[in-house]
Image (cartoon, rainbow, N blue to C red):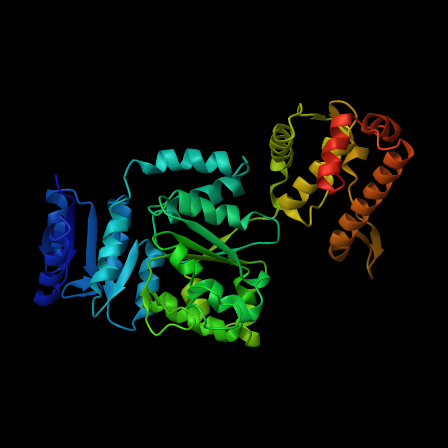
Length: 452
């Protein structure tokens, strides 16, 4: 049986064009010229897809999208908007529309949209919730709420802006949205916009032709092409140069790119997810980020909470991380003693989940036997009291010294291990005994510190 599509538009030419295009994709179409006819069709049969114009004789598309979300939540609905009327399209996406397409219709864009929409299945949410729970661990209400939003956003093609502090897991959230959505069979391509030299960003995103600049010894695909059919995750998007922001906006709007040195445009079909730990709205105010690009990326904001706001999940996460690290290093997973559990529960974690991982990886190396103590955690300087005009209160840990502390600790470890090895003539077993750690812990530390 062919997929069934409900098409709602009061323009006979558009209705005919949509019907012909979808029929050519082996999709049976039921046309409706207004909302009354559309509602009647919905009562008579079920559909796999709905396309609706935003302006209809007896109502508007936004109201229809809301009705569909309430009464037919599993039905993907895409809206058709007048050229340049992006505001209405954004409102529709926020109300739950799957995607939008602008007039005059580009048939390639329309076919891509329909193909993606038909990959969604009404039985997916239960399986997706299970997968989301296995990847994004936690039992606090705030994390359960986040998992629910991820599952819902996975059924949409709306651009999502993921905000949160460094180390909270923004890329994991983006990858989950991709994996639980209709594009999961295609690539998820992350790019850290702040880690690429400004002169190479355009080439990385859009690719280049051989000879287009010094060092371009061959044609190269850009990340938009690699992500075609899938999802492009722009991490630290606030760090994009202004000139590149203009070109990115055009690529998103036109769904085409032009490689550096090429005279031809290439069609691309990607979903854009973006993130940064900076305040993007403040960047717009200061002029470092384009307002028009902000509104294209910031259709829906998803906030990833810091670890200190979900303290009840800390030990659950810690045990999972220890299991993973132990398995990776072919060793038995150690337990946390009561003092270690208490210390973790009371620590502020300015570096969030990433810092928890680093702390436990270090503790796994120095722990004696199968138990990790508070001393093994080597937590940074605890909260220190400071005087205010009214009373005494606890100050937060100094975030700026976190990276310096990590590097200094590693340097001290490297010196101690090197000294022990030299004094035992590079006998690892004797060196481990001299250091008071197991042979396996020493072997792991040698690998991590590049001392092998």
